[in-house]
Amino acid sequence: MELFKKIRLRIGKDILLKKVIRIKRDVYSSNFSEINSIGIVWDASRPAELGILTGFYHRMMEMKIDVKIFGFYPGKILPDQYVAIRYFTCLKRDEVSFFYHPVSSEAAEFINIPFDILIDINFEKHFPLSYVTILSNARFKVGLFDQKSTDTPFDLMMEINKPVDIENYLVQIIHYLKMVKNETVNTIDANLN
Image (cartoon, rainbow, N blue to C red; front, top):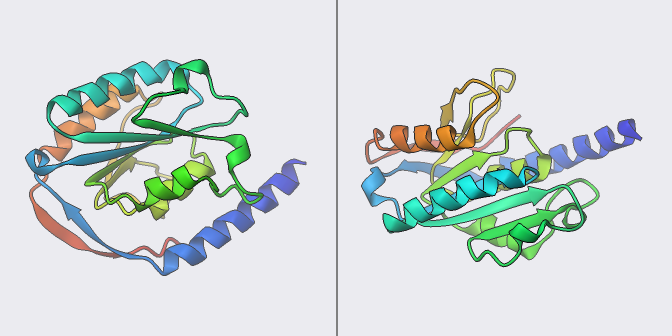
């Protein structure tokens, strides 16, 4: 069964690569004071972290920055605390295709939003979340540095000791984003061979 899952995942990655090859995007970093929107891609298998993300959401709202969180929960039924939060959308296991691609309209909508910043909190590298991060129309993508990965969708990578404390991770991201100057970084050919 594990071999079959690996084959499906490999095919899913190959299909994603064909989509990515056609994408070109301008990487644009804004001064933090000019940021209007942040998208967060989150591994929702750890419900205890929702409180940290809610606190981050409220801090950003105080600064007039709109935040949307897209999560992936590997179960069929969402935990009660995930339901009816207007800034949070969660993909369940049954909302991915045979090849692990998200098939919900919410996933497609999130991918198409041109966030100023996309923050990836997918430390376990769940493929449905990686799919969303890679295809996202965000202007600047931030994620965790991984020595093993030669291909990355990130424009800024954070190197933080594991296990990663997401509260510290978010604080560090905001700290470094405040250092970034306003400029077009470059055009990235999103070929992630």
